[in-house]
Amino acid sequence: MRYFDDIQVGDRASFGRYPVTREEVLDFARKYDPQPFHLSDEAAAATHFGRLAASGWHTNAMTMAMLVAHHADAPVASLGAAGIDELRWLKPVFPGDTLRCETEVLEARASQSRPEMGIVRSRMTTFNQQDEPVLTFIANALIGRRPVRD
Image (cartoon, one colour):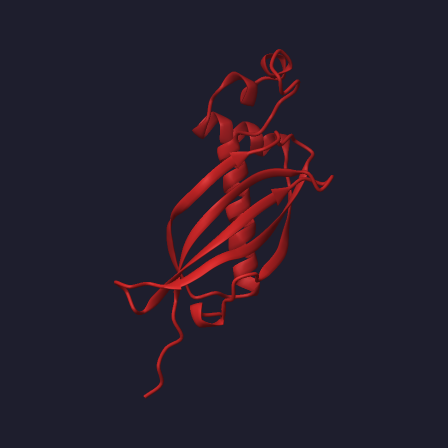
């Protein structure tokens, strides 16, 4: 288990492999972002996407799925998050793409109001199979401190 006390500015990790399927793009769009260019080849062809594209919110969800799977393999004392900053969808994600992630710790500071945790700011970047960044944001994670032994 990695605790706040184990995390250093500059720490990096690369992880994940997420194949994007047409069925999942359509299912997510129907449920959460039913814009025509996420639902129809014809509508998408008439836009700057040129073809069916995943919702940016779907890309966020796929990124989160890869992060949670990574933490299952390399556990962190996560206590949730205080939000994200600077969210950018840099390129569209299409059915047939395969995504992966990289993260870098930008800042780590002890919480002044909650001594049992620290706040870790990390840049998360999601890439497609051509190593083009498709999504980036800064996560503000709440990470538990190492328990004090009596």
